[in-house]
Image (tube, rainbow, N blue to C red):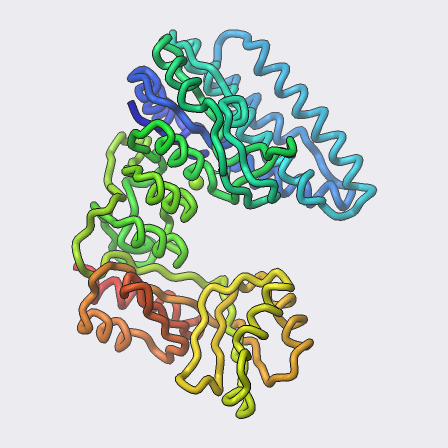
Length: 429
Ligand code: ASP
Ligand code: MG
């Protein structure tokens, strides 16, 4: 038995559904995401509702389409849920029109509808094929999350193992909502975008089995196939997978990898369209560069000034202030005597960063036209690293830490893709 997670594209395509059916037939626990595009549509719905322009119909229709294409019988609980979903969306729209800005809890309540609907649709789909599938909202099998909206963590599981085991023993297949949870206080939460993977690795940990993440590619790729020739990476360590994900590679969610590492779960990644399993994430890996990743949604803050050199606690002051303004730091580097502190942040928080820095008495500059290029691989040689550097034009912040699992540079944004392409060609054979 394993835990099999199916992403949005996998639950929305005929081939994906066939792989899902095979998984269910073999008695695995199934974790599902919302239907393709639904979480984005729900996010957009919330935005539109604040302007008094929200329309729940297209979202409901997306689910109706699944019914029309894949179901033949009438499933009362599916219909009832969709009706409830529509009523809730209409109610939320009325409230948001008044409030004019989304409240985080309300947002989670809305986003959670996507997974709740798809679990019910998938269970109905399987039942029509003679499989005794039961849909569960994750809290119904005892998962408890922190209370933090938008990025909650799964912290406890009460009776989860025995509940799932007794279903499987009785020939029932649990279809569990990924991505969503409920806190001790009874609030519905979400685990962060892409968080269904995380639900799956936690459940695998609870059951002491492997997690198989079914997606629409054969596994983790050496680089973005749109940039350069890419292959599937067969083996990655937990650290490598985490760094690759954080650096912009299409990997499974970093929280999923972290949970897998902590709970000792072996993770497999496969293509639900072809049933090929390409990548295994575990303790094992070979030394050398494996993945070249890049992202352009970053900005570089440079805090400078001679007086910083002998003033104790400058880094703490700057980072605390940024933290107070909700700015998440991706990387931080200073030179030996710290006349310049380089701080890499997500581009979406530049306004908050500027606000934070204005409160401080240092010289600073925020550079938005930058990109991050990272090469990931445990045990890289100095030669790998120097090939990396000589392939990057006009690079700036250089970070290599964590036992050289990853080396990153910040480059002018217009060089990002070119640098990633050159690197993939030079470093990955
Ligand atoms: N449906 C959620 C999202 O789109 C969770 C997931 O797909 O893992 O972010
Ligand atoms: Mg995903």
